[in-house]
Length: 133
Image 1 (cartoon, rainbow, N blue to C red):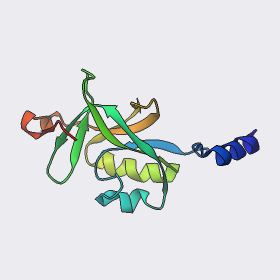
Image 2 (image 1 turned 90 degrees about the vertical axis):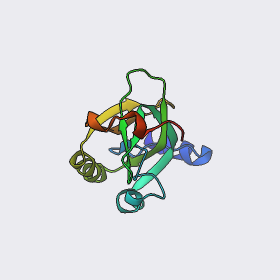
Image 3 (image 1 turned 30 degrees about the horizontal axis):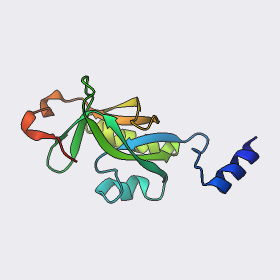
Image 4 (image 1 turned 180 degrees about the vertical axis):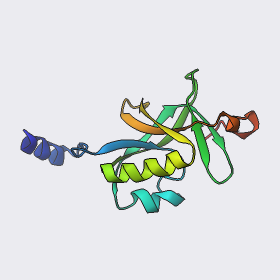
């Protein structure tokens, strides 16, 4: 079955996540062209596509923070990558060290992906909110 899936994928240009890989949604410094992308993802991830998640984003100057939104009225755009477990571990350690928590979330395009939401509600200030992307 795996052989046929590979042939079908190659013939029709359909991407399937490698076995054991973890899907991650990025929205800030891990996106292509930003600071942490080169270090964590450039050579160790497969770009899946652009997407969005429900949430509220705020700026802390050098980087954005994302909070879960209970109202489901705002999508935050980002990028989805598939990463090997060891890469996910490194990203998770970096994000959790900065006050984020990991949550498996359904994206706007119906992908299950891990998203890093911030936990410090003190950053959730109206004048720091990013409303347009």
